[in-house]
Image (cartoon, rainbow, N blue to C red; front, side):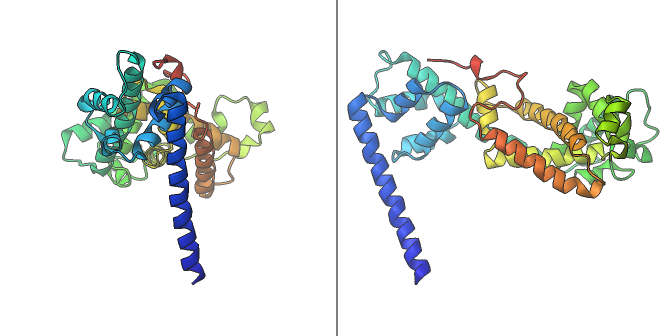
Length: 326
């Protein structure tokens, strides 16, 4: 009975707050002469702060047009904005920048949804050793990471040198499918120097860029390495879950002036690999069995950073200053 009354109270409270919010929106419109979308665009700086407020406003609207606008095809965004302006009785000649700002927001919102679909497709595609393209990507990964060491054969214990568990890497991609390979190859190819350094440090942590005095100060003579490729697949899983949960919206809405793409996701993976490597060294785990603890602590730190609406995980990429301003 108590459980039923609690549920009833929560339902009543929900509808009361929803009714109160709609009344407040009505009053604000009468006082300012602007609808909620206009107030957000005029009073909120471009980037994640604005786009997330626009997304919430559209999704929670009682209008079917506004609700479905967050999932339209990119080619239909311009027409959708015209329909929204007409619905809200907004004259585009009087408010020319409003349409531009809404378009930028919708491109990001729709693009984020499409990015999830693209990433999910790669994650669901298993590695196929009979597929020449898959095999070519795998061999390129070796070439980028070990440019001065020829691979003796496709099935080889050498794969353990870059962090795979056995003599055939295909079994290590089961968790993340082709997505794990795509990310590792992107990191190894686009940021070759850093990827090779991280690989070297993961194999021989005490011989990294730190001096002997720094190692002794940080007790790094006991430093534990890790399997580069396996950790790369694990960080891919972290990036994937951050994306699907919506946690990466803050980051992508701040760095992508329009629709976030697969390249943005892969750049984020590179950043996470860099940061996890530094985090692992700072944590100085006693053995590899502490990996899950360190990973979870790292995940919580990233999520906390992403709760800041101004956060961009990759500051060297385009930030919100480059977005269209009103």
